[in-house]
Length: 201
Image 1 (cartoon, rainbow, N blue to C red):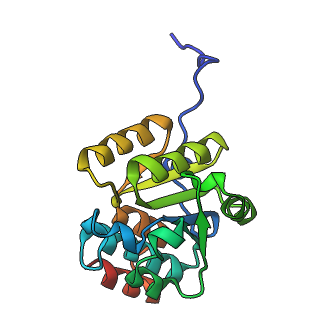
Image 2: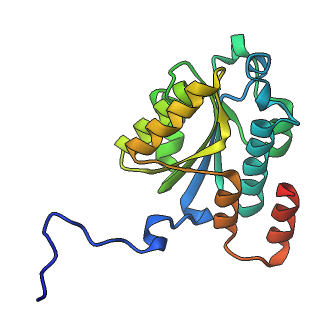
């Protein structure tokens, strides 16, 4: 006996439809990885896991031409983006904000809108405050969101863990850095592959 599909169940999308992360249709949003946070969140430092993964994402985005936006939470008090990240961001400007969500500040919201990107890849701090608030607002706007689980942090590890669970429940993908950069890359050949594979070793 054959049955017709339920009108309440959408057809299962193909893998590419679910996760078609092309450089030309995605953007990286580096959130608030600033100097004054480093003492409270040491893992964002240059030789630390989250700091290293944020750098890999930023540098890979540069290699592949992925649009990148950088936010800074009240930089007059909290300082600029950490030097090891600024060094690979080139001419990418840092956009100041006071709202926790990047979508709440007009300049960043305008940058998001004008980018015309489907996928937004989020990294930075704090996972349970600015990163999660931004993910929620982007999803509410109908955009697709990836929170890079090994490139976000909070002062308390349990807060970051809860934030990643919440982001997933809201509809974001939570993925590791290498999944994102190799999905951007697509194949193991060419100069871009050589440069990016060297970054993740």
